Structure formats: structure tokens, C-alpha cells
Length: 315
Image 1: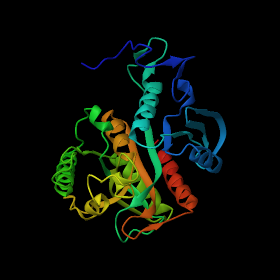
Image 2: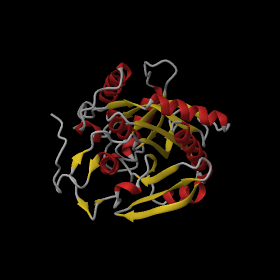
Image 3: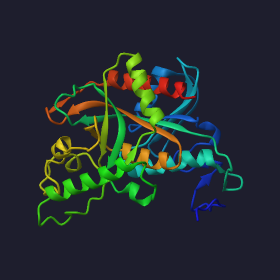
Image 4: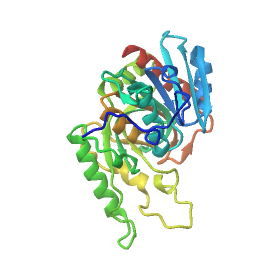
């Protein structure tokens, strides 16, 4: 049976009515949230798009700024996920706790407020025809990390189960027979909220910004995990990026479009809770064409603009 509290201070550390890592009071986080990996991207986004910022907190490498969207007038929080799903797991649990748990009684509220959260990030493109700067709107995400495996959320639909099976078989077949970890990578798949992914695509169309919808692969690291074989330690799955780029997804109209490090757990966890979540990432590195965009600030601005309009349209 799921616990509703009371939670102990070792379960959920609260100091001065603030969560431990984000260092935020409940009222300091908006119900509409954009999450970015790099803490320095938070003030970059806020300066470009927000006014009347009443919260600006930096703690343990995590930055949060809450203010009003200049264009829509909506209260929005921009917060850091950190790099990778382990850091994101901490942030999302505290985000949810800020909205769902009464810190006076340390029990869960009966009717917690709904949340909408969109990840805006950068990624590596997997298809030859994806130009640098293209925005990828995630429909499904496949996690090759293990963070999601600790949360037993049900698969969102049969396509998630199909992706888990096909990716798992592909990686096992590609690993060397004598590899220590052959068959020990357990993919988990999740789907973005249909309302969020549809709205992201709609707003991209309205702003005439180039984008593709597809499947995102979330890796547990940046180098061997994404096919960058630069170490003297042998990799478990050679050419993992190329393998997945070519793999038939079994889902009409969708291919594996990009790799990054956070989408899988965001969708698995937040949608598992019944909240709305989505992902839009700029392609700044084409893995098939060996091209990297050194200057990509405008791509991030385009993605944030779309995300903010999406949050407003869903309100």
C-alpha cells in the first residue's frame, strides 16, 4: 500500500519549511515548470523571457528562478535538473513534494494541484537528414539508465512494451559474446503526455520553427553510453548510436531521433503520477554526420519560446 505519511525528516529532509536540495518553500515554485540541465541556462532563460522574478535560488548546484512570462503573463518556474537521471530523480521528487505534501503535518494533501513540466535541452541527432538546430519533440522515450527501474510505474501503452523488448534485444545482440555486461542493460520506455507533445508541435508550427517528432533515447552518460568510444576501456555495446538510429521502432511514422540524458525518467515518473510532462530538445550534434554546433543559443531560445507558449495554451 502506498504511504500517505506522515513522512519523517529522513524520508523528506525539510529545513526552515524548505526542501533540502532545491532550497525552496512550497509557494516559491510555480505549477508550470521548465526544467533545464545546465544551471547557467536558468538565468539565461529568465533574462530572455521572464519579468517580475520574485524567486532566485541557487543551492547545491541547482538554480531556480520563478517569475512571470513576459509574453503570456503566466507565472512560471525555471529550474535545473542537473546532468543525468540520478540528479533529475532528486529534483522531481522535491518538485512533487512541494506541491503534494503539507510540510506542517508531513502528510500528503488530498487534492494536490496539477503540474505541467517541460524539459528544454540539447541533444545529439541520430538521423542523417536532421539538420543542426532542428528541435525534437519527444513522443516516446527509451531509458538506458537504471533510475526509472526503481519506480514501478505501469507502461503507458503497448508501444512502450514493444520498445523495451526491441531495444533490449538489439543491445544484447550487438554486445560481444564474452562481454561482462551483455544482456544486463534493461531499457524502460515511457510516453510524453499527448496534450503536451501535440501542443509543442502546434506552437512550433505557429512560430515556423523547424522540428521533428520522434523517439528519444536517454543514456546514463555522455561518452560510451552514446557511442563515443574514446576511452581505453572496451565499450559494452559498440556503435550504440548507429544501431538505434537504424532500428525499426515498430511504430508507424516514428524513428529514434535523438539522444540525451534526462527525458526517460521525466516522462516515466511525472506521467506515472498523472501529471503532464513533455520534452523538446535542440539537435546540436549530428551523430551520423559528425557535426557539432558550437553556437546554439538561438536554438535554445526557440525551444523555450515554444515551451512557454505550450504551458500557456494548456492552462
